[in-house]
Image 1 (tube, rainbow, N blue to C red):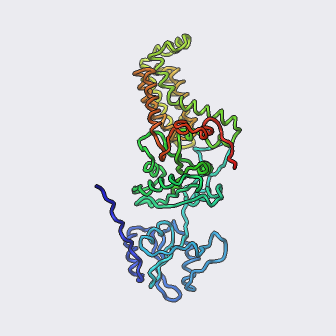
Image 2: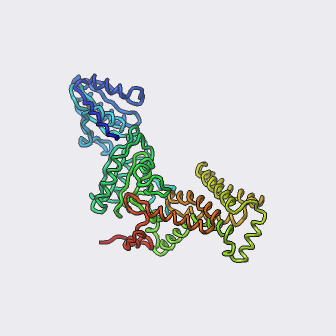
Image 3: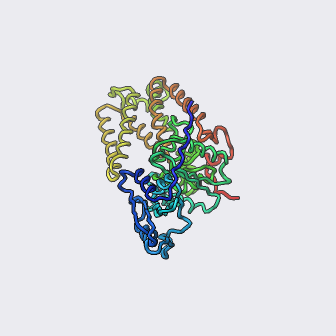
Length: 474
């Protein structure tokens, strides 16, 4: 039986500056970006300032901390622009070596004085960041043009700018043995269910990993069923999407170092909803949403249905269309199943190549490559023209899904569905649909059914599935 080891006691700072410096130099041995600046104050008190170059603003450190100490012996709040000041309230008292280490790696300047058993951390952050810009993967015709960045503080500010209320709660913790990544849990108090906050907090506390380099590291460790191909959390770069979901009683996780935030609990229908549904004309949005539902089903079932019908159930095809398909396939050496697998694998390869190529030529190469390969394959008699049409429609259908993670599930399940169709016909297709529905029925997102509000049926929640909900009012 596994037992949890007791946490090691913290090493307290001592009044002897030389001992503190020796301990810190031992921890940061080989770290050339950590600077140990020794000096004396105007009162001839030995002092040590430790900071990390690149993360700490050395110019502000010199003006607001080192120069006042060397000249007057006091750290004063300088006059000038508010952004350049270091208010006393933002200074952190440091009493242990662990606190000093964490503060230095966060970008703070840690000041230690001889004869004092506590140090001071000055948050003089200078972390390289980029300005908020519209996410390329979630662009909309109408809506906000800003997006999350890799800076946790900037992301929190973007959310606070939209939800100016004290019920918006943010709780930050550190996860990752080596990365020490800050993760902020965000929710609306009074709207979210308290047991949901308790559940996600417990899962984050149980998460024991060495590094957090992207939000997927967190997602994979806290979702209910990591082996499922269906996403159980929404990953988004849009602050308006996060704000909208918070107002619906969900929580969000902001991870330092990545622009992608996580939202839960979710269901299958929320994966098919776009933020633009609420920004455009309601009737057009309802039409597009239903079109999205239909094409999402087609992206999973169209190739397998074509394979099953052309292989086992030709009597279901109208005579004229059947003769046209027969003429197109009379010189094809492969059965419909092999033909579909060849085209689907080639399409997935072209899609992946388009993503990996430089942005300037990626789309051109993928489109031209698809046209050339499709035309050459038809001319050579490897695949038929109807199969190319089916694969093209399937690809377009998968591009209509707003959430990239949701389209991955259909792309993966498409292949076993085609194999079932090629071996058992429509019976195999129905068997595959039944297995998928069983899996979705058993799937949970933080304890919430994945098919809700359809199963179990929740009439009030169905309003936002079948049509578009109006803006909230009291």
